[in-house]
Length: 432
Image (cartoon, rainbow, N blue to C red; front, side):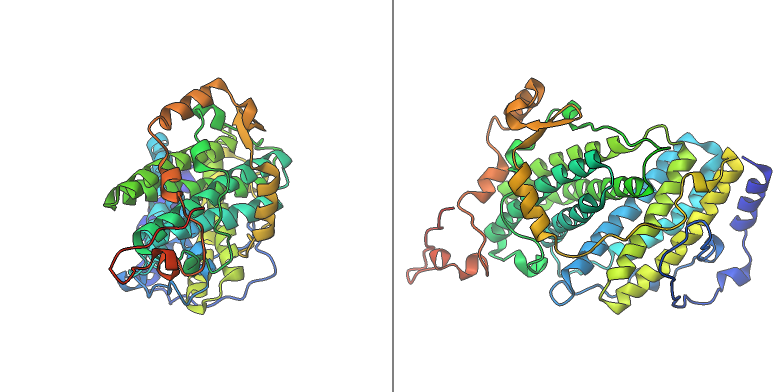
């Protein structure tokens, strides 16, 4: 590492007491666009928290807009990815460990604050519904704006699978609680089948995709890939954590099945990213992606208290970009402008993409993959067919949970066919 960089790290590690007592965050008015190469944000040494700051009042699962939940869940995933990458990078790059440790500690506190915005009265299955709405609406926004036609197809392909997951988990919510998942998604997303989860299982080699090229790809292409990889990885980890907590045997199996698909999605999205990017280049892109996502949240947030959090963390991440950009330039002797766009692209649109999803469903329901190509299901590889037959040999939990389920307003408790009759016996469920 360059001597000036080492000196900077040593000085920042012993920052003055005055810096530790820096003034509280004040609202900043932003220009029309963020300039990643010029806007400095809040310097790393002045990014501090107290325990009370880390545990703030959560959003309300019923009265806040559903996209507030979507933003919280996604940003938890974005921060989780920042930590995951930071630890992996540290294990492979001894000279960077000091710098990574400092940034990573702030990222961990940011993730804590964001994650703790989820309310205690939102049970794990309700949070799961939120995870799938994230996957639907964020992926749809990304797919609509992606400048690379092949990668736009990759995103639409994953979108239809997550769309089906929302339907399966909604059926599980009806089964266990008799609740209507639409009280959470607030009619922004349809609750109907997508590409059936039972046919989504593919051989690992059929989940790899063509990479973008680091020197030729549009900056938005890189941000899209890093965003969806982060979101899907957090989804996988969440399902692996809470799946065993259910007593219902179908619920336990459903989480196991869909967690496997989320692993496939992580494989798909991470395979897009050019492996020839250097460690510092990837770190710089991670930080730029956090800026992009916090800015997207800030542009659309309707809860003013949570909007202030996005605004604060945008300033923090701009400080991280500046810190890592200097490391990058001093270590690799390359200009950060080779990696970062001067101005951020148009933000992610947090809005309903119902018509886009419906049109994608009409056109691409039968798509599968063979190697890096997308093919009709009739043209799948023998490896994928053998893998799927093995996994589904004793049935598919996603088919079991949705047997006879048709979404309707109010859920099971409002369905005359499922109410208790006068003798206390439950009526027959209506068939799909």
